[in-house]
Length: 241
Image (cartoon, rainbow, N blue to C red; front, side):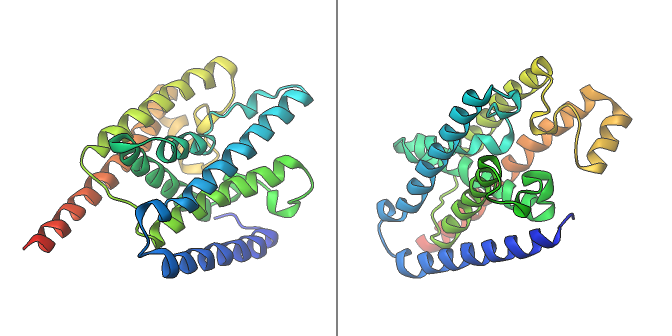
């Protein structure tokens, strides 16, 4: 783990606010309709879209930096959230599972090593728009996950494994292609800032590393959805008895 003094202070405060908002929502909204419970996720999605649009426009104005192409794993959240919140029916339900599990990825990785995701943004939050963007963007994703947990706003089904695999395989294929084409380290594809993963890459080579990274990205989420679906099915069967 890599935490600076600023990380400890700022991330502790922000985590406290997220937990408070999530508990508050869980208490006052859990028994509301599914449509009402979806409102916080919809608001977060709209803010993420606005933040990403502002980032892209500023980057174009300043002279576009290829690093700002939204092909980092964290950049895709506005896509998954949009597909989950602006679509309807079975597709929306499937994408809600994709969005939820993808946001879980961030929560798990973020608090393990925040600097590998947001750099030193906590040391100078308002020093630049990019610092503010990376801090706000990632914390909104974490808030999205925590709110959906508090509201029990998820319903995993076996078919959602397919939604996840197609979504992640499509993203990863594009990210790998563009990382090598533009020589930009999207999603740590060219090299890893996580020491044991970088050692793995240097040991087995780029091709093997790329396959393992992709397999982990797709496979872990698929297993999570599969087991969550099994649990969900068992709980429904008990209620029917």
